[in-house]
Every structure is written in C-alpha cells, then in structure tokens.
Image 1 (cartoon, rainbow, N blue to C red):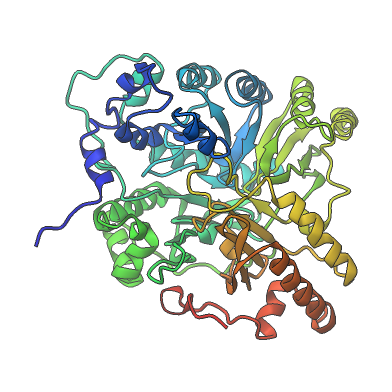
Image 2: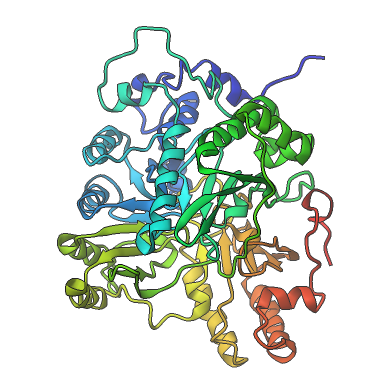
Length: 562
C-alpha cells in the first residue's frame, strides 16, 4: 500500500534548499500574495503570509483579493539586543510594518502588516544591524530561549553564550536566504544540508535553556530543553529534556500537549552534539504523513523514552549521566528594578501581551525609543512578552525611571494576575485563530479583576493565558487557567497548572461564551477564597479540591474530563 507523504514534504523536497520560486513570487505585482508553495517555503525565511480577517468579507463582496500582508519574526537567541539594534527595530516597525512591534513568547520580536514590496527592504534593514530572520518560523529549530538576564551573574552570561551557540549550530546551511534577500552570490552547485537534508524536519522544533529556580522559559514545554546545573557561578553542565510541546487539535483525542522527559545530564562540551543528535533523530523518525502528529513529542511517544534516549546517545557518541536534582519555584518575570552582584541595575517593564505601540494612554514605542537613545547596556525580551532594560549604571537609573514613568511603561498599578498572564496575537491577522486573543484579553482581565477583588484574592498572582486556537503559542496548557479559543467569542476553560510550568492543566468546561466563562470563574474564585490552604496557589487548589485530576500520562489520560 502506498504511503502518501504530507504535501508539505514534497514542497520542501522540490524547493532547491528553500529557494522555491520566491524570487518570481516577489516580482509578481498582480497580487499581494505569494504562490501557495512559496507561502510554505517563506516560513523558513522567517515570515508568514496573512490577510486581514476583519476585511475579508467586505473585500470578497467587492470582488477584491484578500488584504494580504506578512508577519516576520526575527531570530534573536536569548532575546538580547543592543540599544542601537533596538532603534533600528523601532524605525523599521514604523516605516515598513504596521507601526508596532510585537514581543513574542519565543523571546524575540515580530512585525505585522508588512506589504510584499516591503519584505526585502525590511530584511535588509535589520540585517544591517546583524539581525536576521533565518529559522524564525518553518520546520527547523527556531529561536532559542534562555533566561533573559544573563548579566545577573556570570552563570547567566555563560548560559546565554550557549543559547547563541546552539542557535548557530542548528541553523539551516542553505544560502537561499542570502541570495534572495541580501543579494548574495548564487551557489553554483553541490549545496547540502548536512543536518536537515532536503526535506528539513517534519514540523517546527523549539529549544530553551532554563536556570533554576526560575522557569521563565517554560523549559518543559519545548522539544529540546537544557536545565543549567551549577556550583556557585560555575556551569557544570545541563540536564537534557526532550519531547515537550503545546499544540493540540480540538476534538482530536490523538493530539495532546506534553511536557518533556528527562534524558540525563551532560557536561558542557557535549551540548552541541546532543542538540544535533536530538534534531537528527526527529528528522529520521518523525511523522511526515500527518502534520498533526509530526512534533517530537509524538515521536517519543511512538518510540518510547528509553529507545529515543539510546538513539540520541548513539548519534551523539555519549552516555547520559543521571539527571541532577533541580527545583523550580517561579514561572514568570520579576518586575521593577533588580541590582546584580556587580552593581548594575535591570528594569523589567510590563508590556501587555507584548504589543509595543503608541496609544492615547501610553506611548510605549516613543518611550523605549527615548530610552534606547541614552541607554548604555542591553535590551532583553522575555518569554512572557516583556522587556528588560538591562545593565543600567547607577548614574542612569533615575533618568530611565523618569522616562519609563512618563511614557506609561511601569507596572506598579497592574494586578499580580495581569502581570502573570499573556495572550497570543489571534485576530485579525493569524490564519489559525478561531477566537480573539490580545485584542480582547485586556478587556476580559478588567472583568476578572473585579471578581478577584470581590473575593479578596486580588493579591494572588494567578497565571492565566489565552490563545485564539489550540496551537498553544502562549503556552496556555501549563497555565493555572488556560483559555483556548473554540470559536468566535467562545473558549475552552482549562484548570490545574501549578504556576511554575511543571504540570499540565486539563479541560474543565468546553465552549464557554463570556457570560458563561465569567459566571464559572466567579464560582471558582469564591470557592478558592473560602477553601484554599495557606499560601496555596489557584492551580494547586483546583487539583487538591478535585475540580480536575492531575495529568499523569497525557497520551492516555489528558482527555479525561470531570
């Protein structure tokens, strides 16, 4: 019986190492879109084709094609950029995008609303300050996450260097990006992809590095994770994790979120070999028929952890030591000023849902531009879509504080739950969105905060995350409360995450509209205020009180409902 590969596999195989006919598609002025095949290949170059869904019906009625534009996501290992780079990021967003910058849960930035004619100028502009978008999307390793403040200690500096090294090591080797966007010389022949091959990976691949006790990267939700093990400030090595992933498909019990398994401990010199081996095993054993089941988590479920680990050891030429004991105590960001051991200061700014723009209430974009004009340290994007003004000397602290206050960048008036919560982009641009995300979440939070105030739990930091679809870009499946879009104005309500990213949540109520959702949360918060134990988090309460059962083996019990 013939096995039919997913059509994306044929597109990749015929792309001539990600070239496709992108040059021809870009030159076609009769449409704002790319050809269907090129729209798939473009993801490897860091951008997605989108259309404005708010305008879709009206344009259809006028016999016009959809209002096409593009989203481009940069590669920025560990989320670190200089003030000079930030000024270029800002200028490009205003000149060639939709006038905003979006910080992402992959610890980088992306632009929305890019017209086709502006794609190449945009890529050239960010490249001039040593930023690219290679592997920002597509079936390759994407932006490598790392604890976002490497200057907090010498350990953080060491680990951030590893994030950059892993990112570079796992990059595609094709010169297509340089040829098409940067006018590089065409390769005459004989080009190869020694790691990825002609068809690259079956699906996207995500990597993160965590430094205990802060799990700000949600390391267990990644395909590949490294947990730094240190003695004082000396990096001893990493516990290696594999098989995490957040995406699922509504009403398909063969799909599920999953937390990564521990493979064992390795010393630093084996890090790159292990990373390459994990990618290679996924390349050779991943599902290339069903993209729903093509992530590494499903590969490990099919192979079994023991067989997967043995294959990685064989390819890396190492044997894992027993994983070292670790403890994670927090999941999100630490806001405000933090002084490190060298006397430098770091200011973590709350950026609601990662959207940097100038609005009547807060001129965030202008404020960050002014700060970048005087700042002598770095900017660091966090995996919770916030921004750190890092390495501020004592002499500059008051001036930066003043600018942040003037432009509405400080978080002192936000509730702990809002500060702990994030949402994905969703409408109007994301083609996967079934419901609203960032546009609606602040309004919903206003209503939820009134309920927490009513029950005296307003000081509790409840981790709440919203996505417009079940793909999980805002990592909702490890939140204490996950809101996952099911349809216009309707969400699945998930409960039971532990507030540190170490436990999956579970479906509690399905397909709720706003009235039903708020009524349900009102009842749950009332119960929590009355029955919780001292210092008990909301997610732990929902498990202990029996509102949902803990997820033990997601392949077998994730879809069990109360």
